[in-house]
Image (spheres, rainbow, N blue to C red):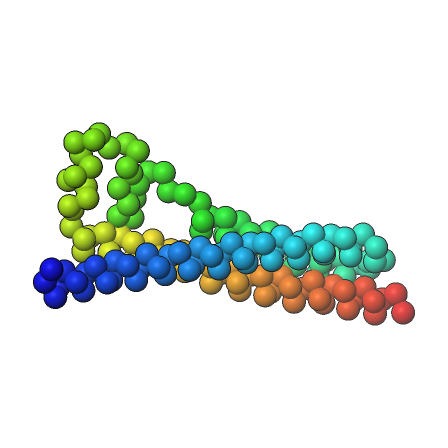
Length: 148
């Protein structure tokens, strides 16, 4: 294999590894957001909420729900085969060798675009999770301060 071919193969492997890492991080963050949503709901039922606490808590929950939606969008399977992924299930057996021997550079470019979409969704979800968590903390402080 030539140096350029080895470089393309290494780039292909690197992009695939980054996508796998991003999907793992997304799964962990989705579990965390779900746990925070469940905990917030449980705590909110037991706390006497005043209007400011109710508003801040509602906004915090809305941001966490938006974060969960972004995370789910990020890991949603692409069944149309875009972004450089050949959709093996739709190919006839005689079409598979041509798809396998296709241009590796085009596949790296497609995978890189997919990775950037996933990175962007993950980054936005993290920002929303932080903002939602801050609003939930504010809601608890407002509820405790209002009860005193």
